[in-house]
Length: 347
Ligand SMILES: Cc1cc2nc3c(=O)[nH]c(=O)nc-3n(C[C@H](O)[C@H](O)[C@H](O)COP(=O)(O)O)c2cc1C
Image (cartoon, rainbow, N blue to C red; front, side, top):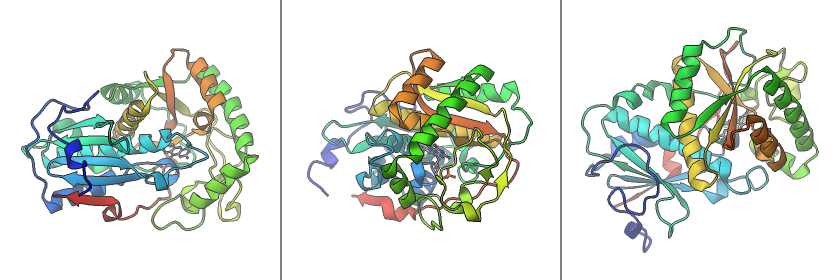
């Protein structure tokens, strides 16, 4: 065990700044089977370009989620914002699986200033009965996929939008639903960002390393990119022109439902929290057979991100642009590394 590592952990509450979940005593010890169930759920989380930028360390009832610097994107995500959102989503999946097993859990972003690579720490309580609001989402963890195909014209009912709002609020974030004029404005911003991306050799080179072709363990395979939009649409074509020959074409819906996931703060802890909120929203959406994809080209660049912030106008920080609706066709799948490849156990 590396010196100082165990010393950085302790009872829930140590070093904490903000927490996720209830107050509790952490007396649980996880069995090997439980660790497998928890981490198999964690790695199903979404991550930018399916980089899976996480490592997990389990010690007694504590799971640390570390940022894997070797799996971050130097060009698209130089400060690790998107990577931490993916880590937050993985932490939410851990909480869902723990809740299904009967463990209450509590998370702390950035738990230890001496260990900045630990992006989040999860404390698990002794096993009792399933945690209702989390365990009911467990079945959605493997069903959720990013869907980049066209959406049906059926609109999302207001009561369902309200449930998604509640999901974001539960994790301290907000969904800002764009009205028609804002969607039009966003469309112009997306076109400019797409054009900038296409002229950015470093970015294209980075994308080529992760996107297209067959990707059995990470990255986005060509068959998960969705059809090529027949004309410019409110969907992101991550291929940047590669793999076009293998892909069908489709006409996309002209007026998708779009929400911007926003956090009140903008720092590493806020990014982890944004990931928790994102994943709670996506899993709740999946319970209603909704699917989502993302238009984050306007988040990855500073200028359009500030323009989007102005468009929303409430001084919160846009973290994800989410296009949401009922899928018109099945989603292509991305794959994951085996969870054991990103796991260390400490005794
Ligand atoms: C922070 C973040 C940013 C993302 N940005 C985009 C995006 O702009 N466009 C897109 O189509 N998918 C985006 N994704 C989705 C990932 O590509 C996707 O989660 C990953 O490929 C794994 O596939 P899955 O979601 O189907 O499991 C993003 C995901 C995260 C967590």
